[in-house]
Length: 235
Image (cartoon, rainbow, N blue to C red):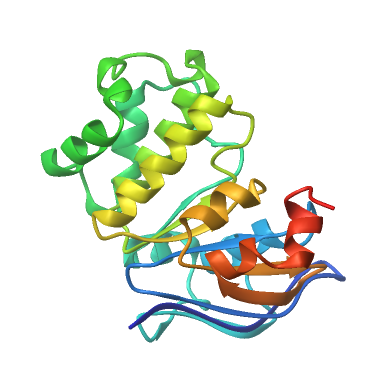
């Protein structure tokens, strides 16, 4: 079953066209990754899906229902949660207050939702009263993902979750992504660490200058010569 269906979207910043007829789909239960260089259109794709940007042409559908004509808060309420690049946590609020805000579309946080987040991220439970801006980068990334999960998403959009983290923390974050998916959440992952992303993904897309230029299984893309040269640093 197709959970997320992006059809021929073109998105602009003023007169500058960032996406040029991008189409992709994510089936229920999959991890799908979108890889590409800086400025290729990865973040713009996620922002268009989550309603932060509106496509000039094309459509985005969730379980068959068009969502690209809806505001971002409505898209979140329908089951699309977005953990953005740069984490964007509320630095002056506590960990618990950040998590509570993640549940705003349901009115208030449910104990089961908090339990799920604290099981995935025990560090957040230990630091639930800590001011979020005083935590390490890895802890803030955990909080950004945990806050998104508080919305009980059917689709989780992750934008560069490993950016700026140590290699050990990168491994931890990717294992958590796999665990989240195993619990039933569909994941669309934007990630510059193409090796890690393709290793956990069922399928992947390669985007260049606003166009999807290649798609395939994670394993096939890992073995593709163009991908290996451009994104895995191999000759």
